[in-house]
Image (cartoon, rainbow, N blue to C red; front, side, top):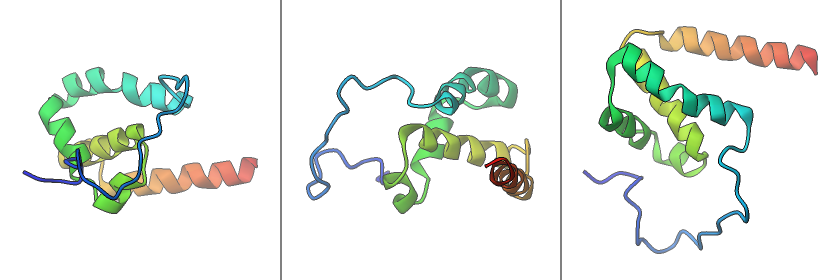
Length: 106
């Protein structure tokens, strides 16, 4: 299967410029996203292959314009919605609520 994640060796995407002294996590939410993997995999019942497929099935434009842990979030969203942990509507409502609270607190 070829996907947006299978870009190794392709031309035209510019140089890879690794960040000097790059931290493992750039923000606290990334640390939490990483920590969610094992307990959620055990509770929901998915494995590494399904998780990777979740990341690789993101729309190409989103995949290319998002960070590593945003790919993880996309995989969680896909798997959790498919498994009935929450609905897309519930997720969107919660995101809207968080954004409204952030705007109110700004």
